[in-house]
Length: 425
Figure (cartoon, rainbow, N blue to C red):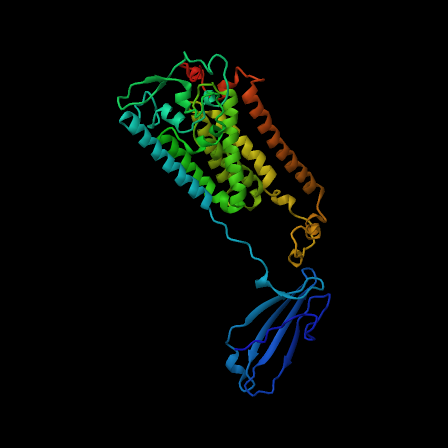
């Protein structure tokens, strides 16, 4: 079966330009006895400005021989007076993969194995007894050594920093007995000034975990939400939300948790993903098959994780901070809800512009938008400014301690059995 390719609408007289959708049939013969007869059905849609052509072929000698042959369909598009471009040649939506969540999960598992090996070398056992670590993991001293969030290693504390008489317990042998070491030895300061300035402890704890139970719950929840979300919003936006939520949770905990509290885990990042899942559900509620079921599952997961955060040795500030930052960044980075995307939007011909910085290519995107759409852009801008403001205020307050909150500790603990006094120096 032969089909002749049609080139353009402007140069080919067979194209019919009409403002009403119509079907036109045209036949032509070639001098060759074996040249098939080309039968065209051409339809023009003025709304989309697209020509659609169907071509059927049949032989001069026996038309009936080709009656059972499948039709060949191809489409050509014309936008304004630009040359026709085959639809299959236009850029297609890329298929997204969830590679980041898989990679970061593997890294976290490898780091946890390194924690167990380090604890084994120092104590003779990969995990501590349950009284020291109820999560079946290494000693807190090992976690501090590997980069856990520990305020005395990060900024100056009155009556503590530089006090040579103050000793910390540390593991330096295989006897599982505590020896005493200075803050410099505990934090592994690499200079003689002994000034605590290890800012990287805002980032490194995302890859550290307290034990088997801790990393198991985080990895399962991370994969459950992260794999789907990364395919939906793309890897770049997921990376921004993941690390910003995790870091903000650690910064929030550094401001209000006891100064001797050891902060570890990717819980803040995981709660950022849960926040994205919440807003994605509300954004696309009408298009979900079982929205109520999804909402119940997300609420149950959120409630369980926040409740666990009230137990000892778990920083609930990371949970709350990560969730709040996830909400703000989802508002700032993701598109508008489905009901705000509707409107009489003129189709743009952005592929005809050579340079990305040609502002004319973006003009059709902003035309004929509703007031609600513009209000939503204002909400996104406010959310972005709020993110920057909160980070700035909390980081400054962490180093200056201008603002202190005596009751904020109850966000991360229950006032029973001295749980809220854990980590006091």
